Image 1 (cartoon, each protein chain N blue to C red):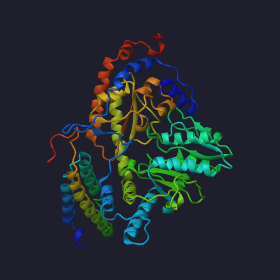
Image 2: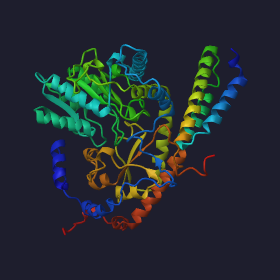
Image 3: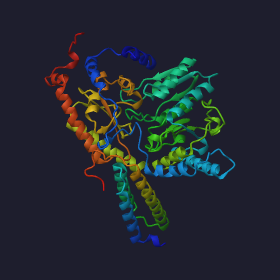
Image 4: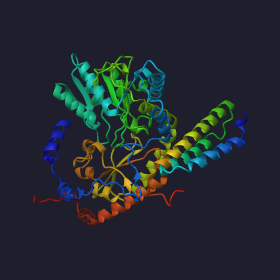
Length: 449
Length: 89
């Protein structure tokens, strides 16, 4: 798709005007040829594996989770909805045990948990479900510009159905303005959807205050907590959250499973997306995949036990990474609020270096610039644009993910390689040369050609 | 209970460390070693016999998990990562 056309579409969807062509654009265009070089190529047989520093994209399964799942893949393979034999009964009891484990992690009742195929399905279910159910009286939905693609896309579809959607802007630090949210809520607002921890910049929204506000105005509050569950303490009653999306593969569980928390008191009604035999309280029909939900349950239980230990460790490692990086090289910007954040997601912009070339140079480390679902397009991340990052800084951002299994050695190696490559790429950059000579880049008049 | 003796706890610790070293995956290996060490250190001063029993049983279960997962890791092993110095024995 043509760049300007895609930008205009993105702009109209997000309520921001298409950005002017800045000087970095010409630099980016020349590097576009190099972009084709990041061909997907599997590792050779004896090539060393890169370090995994992309924990926001997905996480490895904890060995304890795999251990819990295997019996249900091998011997206990019954359908949990079979009521007439032991295979069904043992499978059902495992499913209910997993439901309790998930509920305990977020402070909910097991009857409020619905198993889905992942956070994307949970998000779709909650947004479309609530909107369509209350369509007769309420027509307005509020969300933010930094939400995950599935939330934004669901809202786009609802707009086509005739709903009115407001995409709240965020401040420069990535947090929403509570005052603005309060003013945006109307008597005909049915749902507010704001993610707990952002997957690209790691910013943590003030969920407790938002929940309070929504409860006082009688609006349902949905939060996509895929990146927050098991990493920060969550209590849906404290936070006054009505719907919450959970993803299995972000908390060291299996891929292909997730959950949706649907509050029972006061009751939240949803129009189901997937119809059929009435499983999961009629909200999500289909055989519940016992091995996967057992894995999700085990992952939640482990996350609850290890929460404090992991959080402490991740904070230490993240600080180590950021301190070292910022002290050795100048002109490094951290995107997102420095305090209201989850430490394990560090998004840094290296000025005068192109993000994709840095990623190519750091081929020994598995990193990403922005989220996996937007990495196919050439556009810089819409999240960075929403927080008002300069066009050129948005192009040179890298996201470092730190998780349960990251070691000091991996962090040190990553930092060292990164510093080395940034210095090398800057040596080659004519922009950097000009900056060193004291020229103010913003004052240059670039000629069109 | 007999398992409350100091020698038993130490032998359990040694077995956990010995098995954890056998993980072929760098990340799992380092995590298991670190977590076992930190876990035992954290509970160094626990006195209550009920809690001790529970912790010891937990440790025994974890030992079984580690043994099984180590075998699976060997069955489906992959290449070394960049930070690993010499081939894992």
